[in-house]
Amino acid sequence: MLQKLRENRSLQGILLMTPTLLIMFALLIIPLVLTVITSFGQRDPDGNVIYTFTLENYWRLLGFTEGGGWDDLYLRILLRSLWLALQTTVIVIAMAYPLAYFIARSPARRRSMLIFLVLVPLWTNFVIRIYAWVMILRTQGVLNSGLGWLAGLANLPFTPFDFYPSQGAVLVGMVYEFLPFMILPIFTSLEKIEPNLYEAAADLGANAFWTFVRVTLPLSLPGLVAGTILTFVPVIGTFVVSDILGGRQVILLGNLVQRQFLDARNPPFGSAASIILLLMTLALTLYYTRRFGLGEEIAAG
Amino acid sequence: MNTSRRSPWLTLTTVLVYLFMYAPIVVLVVFSFNASRTNVVFTGVVNQGPCGPFYWYCQLFQNRDVLDATRNTLIIAFTSTIISTVVGTMGALALQRYTFRGRDLAETTMYFPIVTPEIVMGIGILVMFSAVFGWINSTLGLPPDQRLSLGLGTVILSHIAFSVPFVILTVRARLHGFDNRVEEAAMDLGANEWTTFRRVTLPLIAPGVLAGAMLAFTLSLDDFIITFFTTGPGATTLPIYVYGLLRRIVTPEVNALSTIWIFVVLVAVAISQWFQNRD
Image (cartoon, chains in turn yellow, red):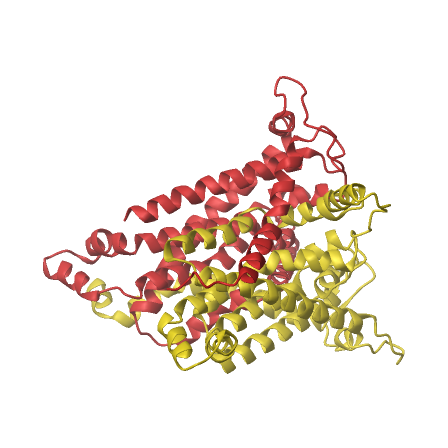
């Protein structure tokens, strides 16, 4: 028996893989299947799930109400989430790209220090980072105090801004949370570019602008795509940032799912919203990975 | 590389982005010394009791809830890290060094948690545990105090689930340049499989395993969303505790807690960096 195991490499591989597969099966596949089943169900007045087969929850998400009416409340939540994710991604790219470029073109020794500095904020806690932004953005907060002080210097009248809670505050929080996840993959791609390529481009008469457009940008595309997935996907599904910085007024897809489960006690509807979220995410990820083929960059993030 | 021709705009942007990243952290730390209990405006450095400016830090260590949450967070992080590191290392060895039927499928399944939104995974695990526990409790007719419910166990299991793929990725990266011949040489010299693994393979992949464990640990410490859905009474973690506070009044204690947190993590990372640079 033992002798057989010693010679059979295939069996050894399967045995080594078994614990991982068991965990994935029990804690990912089965939960997802149960979520799908629940999403086709209904709830009784007490909030218990009745397992049937109805598409009602999905229709409701898409705007069709029970009596044949039209209510685009949930569609608007969906679109708002996508729009916020798009805004966040664009701003994050605009901030992350120059920084990643700066780091990639720094001397090797300084590079690891600069990347280390990008990672440090990630080691504070997710919830704590958002709380820090509340302290900065609220009416009597740090930003308004600073602005008031500046206005005082210039002898100008100053009324504090209501930065928080607002949709803008949510955007700032999202940008802050996901900035490192864009910087790291872009840096990974940029670092791989041979310095000779820049020299070759310069020798061939390209100025800084054309070198960037024709050499740097195309070669950093895998990093950009990986960063986009790592930003866009979590933004749609996060409920904490909008919950805290939006003062419960900014409702995203993630908030919808969370509230259906914990406040409204309607697991079937929450499950349907969760499945829609998953499908959107997978479609996006598959499209990008098929199109650009990457893995290493995502792993770097 | 020519770095002298860098545009001043690029340097300025870089400095501004770093400022943006660090401003909240500076605010957090400074406000942990605030004299004002409501902690909205900085009214000066607190100087109260035997601890002086560290008043809020001392308050923190007398806070039962914080101590319990810290204990829970550490129990969850350590347990899930140990299990996911062992499981993940085995998985990485299987995927990188063996060919077997269903290998491609196993690989795809493994990447799945990385692209699944956390909330979807959290909801799924919640749905599953409620269904399974509900079924067991009603079938066995358990009395209320013995019923299965969400708690430390369910949180640990869910943390293992999202950590394993990251451990596999990290260890595989290390296995990439592994020379199989050193193992063959060990076997030729009469070492059995276990001795070969312990004396040859493990020391070679140890930095990767350590890096994977560190990653699993930080992921567990930082997790909010999945914990939020899988936790139950008596299993409050620090992030869950802080989130609860944010809806009420936030005293500088939370800032003190955050400052200690940042400090501890920085020290831990510095130590692990030092270990990695040593070999």
